Length: 171
Figure 1 (cartoon, rainbow, N blue to C red):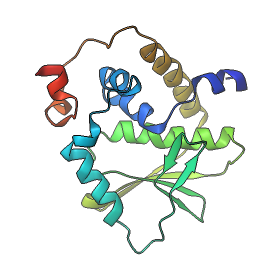
Figure 2: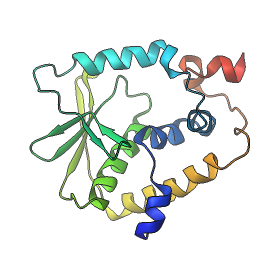
Figure 3: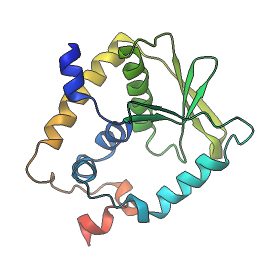
């Protein structure tokens, strides 16, 4: 991917996550219909983020006002803290995107880690050539979703029950 294409396609980490979870949610979120602020699940995640690993100094890293890494350890580890493993693949791709984004900014040799404090589980995430290709494809597809004139059709999934957009889609 060329630098100019990357500049045109780069997004926030939340958008990468939402792309994997639900294309409709991605479209609604990127078109400024943000229902997450009133979501109990989002509030629980924020509380967990504030209380988990409280012995570590708060080391959030905001890059280009676009991506926010939960914890950036001095060892070069990019850490993303998640409330639940239910959307693990989406969380994994989000961390891969952070590693990819930082590599494009000239910061390489980083490793990612997903942490699920409630389950006391950690998973290492590595940026491979295959993962880079997956991110580049995902960025192109995210643009396609964002460019739609109206949101994609709602498709029921198990995640819909607890989604902040559930009433909007199904109410």
